[in-house]
Image 1 (cartoon, rainbow, N blue to C red):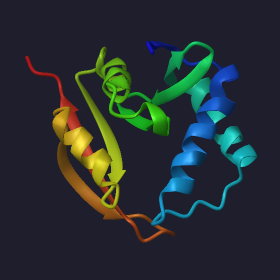
Image 2: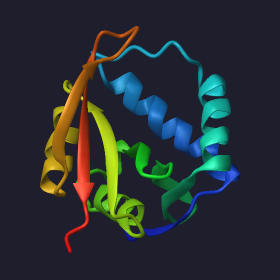
Image 3: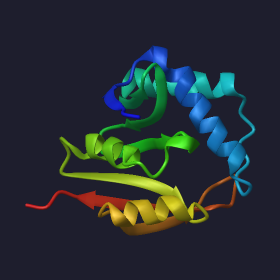
Length: 145
């Protein structure tokens, strides 16, 4: 099946939160006590103030990316659509008008670390996240001149 990437809208938030919550539920090392409704409130604010893109196949949202000025807030793809270039397409949208971008990924999220490395982001820092004690790794992509 094919998909397209378009600007994210407020009406897309619930579908995006479903993708995020599914990922959290699939991830045994991650605990997020927020309900889907609480997540939706948070993501409505991101979609209101930051740029967002969604990947859509037919009438189904299959992935999304949210970016503040130079920082990616989120990049998630539905489980059954992973490894099809959707994450790369969303990341390319986030990089398109930037000289650099930053994205954080947990050390435990091995697939994300491989993805960001493959897409040219380099590790530039790490910290232990308050509350979860998970190691969060900062990555940077810089546009080549």
